[in-house]
Image (cartoon, rainbow, N blue to C red; front, side, top):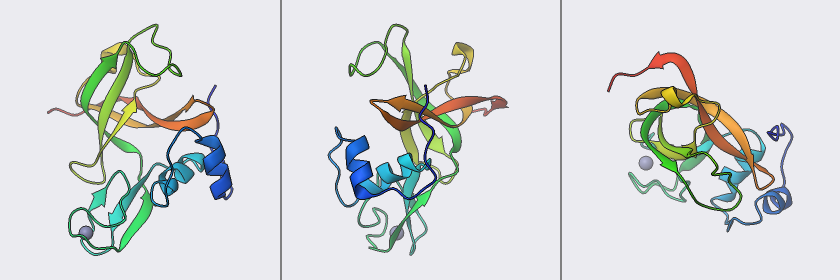
Length: 155
Ligand SMILES: [Zn+2]
């Protein structure tokens, strides 16, 4: 059962309530607010135009404080892949659970760790093109990725 992200404004109280297990601060709350709004967010520097994730108060590339929080498109390529057999109790591990480091199309090296969902085992592979999907975990929407069939990148 996937929790459809809301398209309305989301207050700080909403974010704290839905992500009660996360230690939220004034920087990372914008990432989690984005999840509730159906956006996967990353930081982008207004000075050097480099993206970064997780969110930071200053640009890790040039140390400028002029960082903006923006939604990424949600398309990318599986850079690394592992299959978990155990982990936090909120996840079902009855079958190995694919966790990918997805390199986002916005920038080389801009990667996010997220599970693969709705993806046949044969397409759970490094180099696979993927797109953003959503899963529910612990009562909140979380980013995941699904394979885009027919789009494979040669490495
Ligand atoms: Zn910068």
